[in-house]
Image (tube, rainbow, N blue to C red; front, side, top):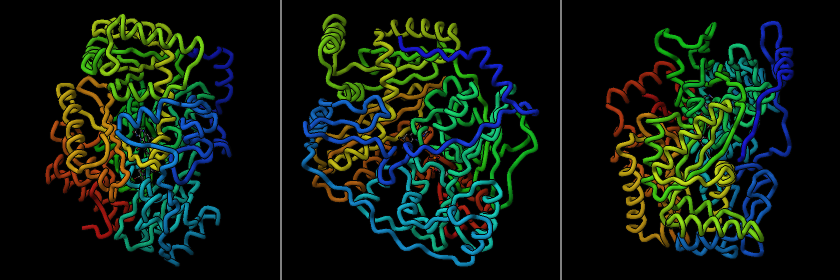
Length: 613
Ligand SMILES: Cc1cc2nc3c(=O)[nH]c(=O)nc-3n(C[C@H](O)[C@H](O)[C@H](O)COP(=O)(O)OP(=O)(O)OC[C@H]3O[C@@H](n4cnc5c(N)ncnc54)[C@H](O)[C@@H]3O)c2cc1C
């Protein structure tokens, strides 16, 4: 059984109390900057990690950061070629043209000279590649654009405030000199939220929050922490763990996304069943707006004090102001963390299990159900095994298929993470396996469960890797009530296949889904779409057309426009379908009232824009 026991030693707990100051707070040192953690500017991830095809025509991952690294994955290319009807081959490459031609920056000399009064030289940057990186997130279209096309408009300068006063001065200067500000967290959004409006005439300033990355204090007694908005997820995890706590918010982008970005996109983490989504975790937010700072004198566990400013800021996409810090709930590091996995004969069986789980038990911290195609994909990502390991794998396969009668072309898998006290986890596990058995589920082991979650982080690198081999891929998510889940999944898959066929695109589309979050009323579903684009004109735009059709199908089937990625600019065309005219008008008027000069001009969610009404 794969289990970690984190229970703190009593002496360690006493040491923690000793670290508190007179106000009962721990004040951690700023996070250290590790050179090893350098990020690539042209693709997802750390500079030391990437996929490549080696001389044996097997895929391998460089570095030693992920469990997939350093081993050959001999089945991956043959499997992809078979499923996609493609010819992914190391000799047939669409070489990246990064960096693209970068437009000259627009200048605003009066603003620039005011900047120098409160920011040091090293906090102001107009390096073309840094400007380029600050003008995009990680959507398929954006990543294709920086490698094979030409961005039309980019931030003209990037600034790095390191204290709230810098942010206030920036907003004041932007108001006085007619400049547009776009806050930047980790640049991981997938909704075109950082894409600069092409017709923005003003100077665009990207406000990079990475120097406001401190945990200002931890209150161990009341279980709260005040964290600056530019703090990156992985550093929040590490620093809180040093004091025996966790925030429990773990989006799959946790290595790079920030607290401010989570708030501005209304994010969701994989362990939300135990800890909640971002809106359940945040007790208070401080933000700088065109009207001044939004802040409060104190924070309480729950309040009813009129309109809640937090609600305006969740999902605001940098349109209303800059979040500078937030007070969040924290939890003791769980005594026990266990991974598990269960396989089911069909997606419908797995779905019925999830439904029952929410009705008759407490779902574990995380539970994910992948469909058959994704199950096959995870098998194709297994390294070659030899000797006793290969024999064990063969015997397991024989048992599952021959003895238990599971069909490899139908079966699906559920991966699970349990967190809590030992008793809690044991009770959850036994209730869960009882329900799983009722639906024909078979325990598939903790190793497979752990692998499933570890793969999440490595898989994020695959999209940029395959783009150079003529494969475009993207995921998109929705949420929907239980009664519509199966119909929605089937219809979206059918629609993508139809759209692919109608355009005469090469090979077969890869279209697959997984359920990643469960609620009492329904679930969050991720779809993964990929297609082989060799010989296709404007392949990225064609991809976007198919994705748009898929989204149309999601809405027709009762799904939401987004469960957690948000609207940005990518989905705003659908807003009139999901909101009444009065609601759209409300959004426009709120924006106009709190930011009349459209200082925060990223133009997300269909509000603002270069010429506000
Ligand atoms: C591989 C991958 C996995 C992902 N997994 C998840 C997941 O599991 N759950 C999930 O919810 N999302 C996920 N995402 C999407 C993305 O990580 C989230 O939307 C995340 O919250 C964005 O945070 P960020 O710091 O990168 O923000 P950015 O991309 O920098 O910015 C996003 C938006 O927020 C605004 N913003 C940023 N910081 C501030 C601030 N301080 N004040 C005001 N506005 C600000 C920006 O202007 C922009 O409009 C994933 C993305 C990728 C590429």
